[in-house]
Amino acid sequence: MLSRRLAGECKRRNLERTDGRWIIPFFNSTAMAAPPPTIAAPPTARAVDEVRKAGVKYQLHPMGTVFEAPDLETACRAMKAAHRAVIGAGAKRVLTTLRVDERFGRPRTMEERVKRVMAKVK
Image (cartoon, rainbow, N blue to C red; front, side, top):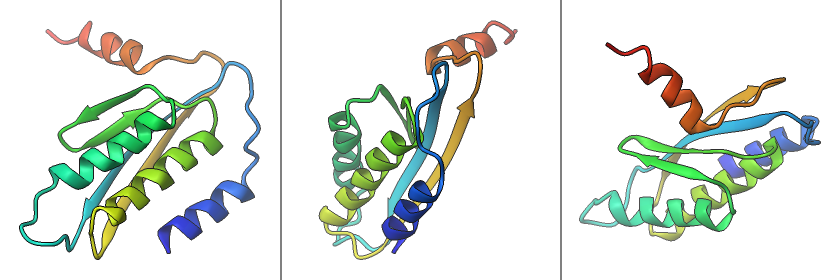
């Protein structure tokens, strides 16, 4: 259901790439009822592998994955593949959260954003 709704949302929006724009989505897919024993690593590894296959630069964090995409369509495809990979790992229920940071004008990479914050940390 989530995949169908997300695909519909992606189609309703104008998905054409605008030069100078980067999209940095964050997603977290959680297997809610995985086969016993419930271990997050195998489904998470499958999800991250799908993001890697999408050809986007990504960073795995303890609570999710962040990646860079040139447009919303690419971001939605990568996230949808990751969501389905968790289901393919045997989960009976999956909760996927997607947050999108879309910056216009002056794009910054994930590393640049972190570097700017760390420069202010005392």
